Structures are given as structure tokens and as C-alpha cells.
Image (cartoon, rainbow, N blue to C red):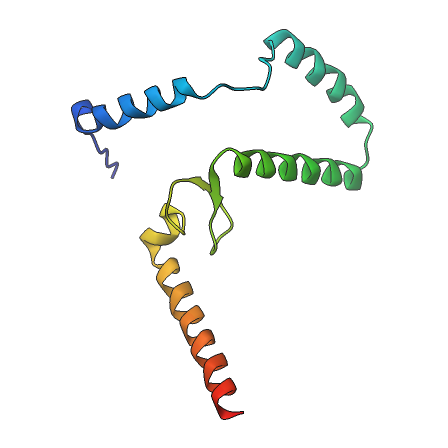
Length: 124
């Protein structure tokens, strides 16, 4: 079965209008990159990547992933404490972990760990 959720655009209209007005006030210091420049860079780097060994490719992909993560974290994204996924929002956990209950498990385990540490300190 396929389930599709639909909603009215008017529900969140004011929220999006406010967000757009806030975004307009922020100046982006990063220069705009043209598509042609990106394509040329990709084509030249594609030729170089074909010649790399498997371990070099893995190292290259790790480097790119780390750069992407740092970029997203610097632009307001957060890292989920349970699964490590990057998400946009104010919550402490991503929506997936909140929905499937892993966030509650994490907090429960963390609470037990803190309680155990306090009990050990009080015994000493």
C-alpha cells in the first residue's frame, strides 16, 4: 500500500514567509560558482579518480564526506546524538530516531549511566 500525506499550503505559509524574509537579510560571503566551472572541475577530477586505487578512492570519499559535514554543521545543521545523521532543526535528535523510539532509549541509557556514576561517587 502506498500512503500519501497532503496538506494545505496555507497552514505553514506565514512560517515560510518569515523564513524567507530572514534569509534575505543575511548576506552570503561565498561567491557564486557557475555551472560551467563545476562541470570542468568534475571532468578533470573524473580522469584523475579513474587512476586511483581502491584505498585512495576511499580516502578521497572520506575527505569529501568530512568537508561536507563541516560545511553543513557551520550552516546550522545538527548531528543526531544517536545515529549521527545531519539534520536541520532545533531538536536534540533527528526525526527518524524520535519516531522509532531510539532517542528515548538513548536518554534512558544515559540516565542510568549518570545515576550509576553518582552512586559510585556517593559510596566513596
